[in-house]
Length: 357
Image (cartoon, rainbow, N blue to C red):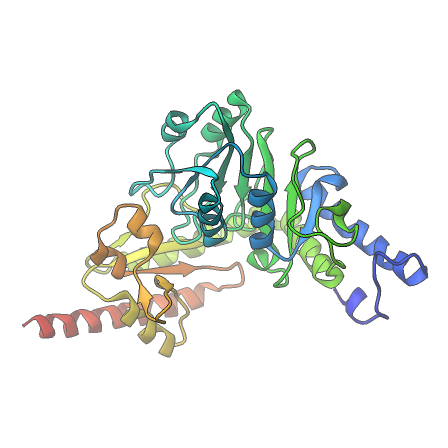
């Protein structure tokens, strides 16, 4: 990134020497991202992040036809689909149970003659539960339906292989230790999309505006690190997660949310009988960053939409918090977090029992 930030201002679209230098850096970064996906340079579009990429995908396909997705997708997908639905787009939200991901047979049942896309996250951002990509891909491949993937919650945690029916993949750099405010979108040749906004000829006229070169260089270097270190990263995350969950699940009335296989950095745990918002606040005071629910318009915290749409009862959803681990975390930090949170949970349980008495 410093190659751009510490030099003279460089615009990859300029034809003078400085612009050509910037263009060379942009091509270098695009090559790294293309190699990560085993794709061609023309199939990579740089954006401000997955939210823009997903909006570009979903809005760029037009409003005809039918889309399959779920009600547990990230807001970047769900809110965009709901917006499109108001404009006449036909959408089916696949049912999701306590497993935490759509079942392949449910997808098969809901496919229609006019189904133009299946839009899913590889792993749920709140529970970490992964879709059965192999089975879902086979369905999409046999029926020639584009599979559009939100890969934000998986890239950097586990290896990813691009399969033939996958027509698009959205990623955000900050989710794998790159800079914030930059992302990349893989768009397979042949998938026709209209630009989200118009302007200059950048990104093959699919995404107008001067490229965030420093951010793109950071994204490409973060992906380069993954290509050389993913196996070790995944192994460490699995060991960190196992240590965290072994410690916290030793507490009475604690249970994992999401029965399906999960990425190794995300644990969504319900501490039954404990208010999750209160637990979050005590943890924050102790220097432990966890999350609970989503902020609503009033500023209060509501039980997780994802957990409720998985069919979990409201009390369990209110008792749940999410833990997101990083390869930068240490085992010592895990041990401190387990000991601290165990003490907080026991304290809150005692307070709750006294209140009930």
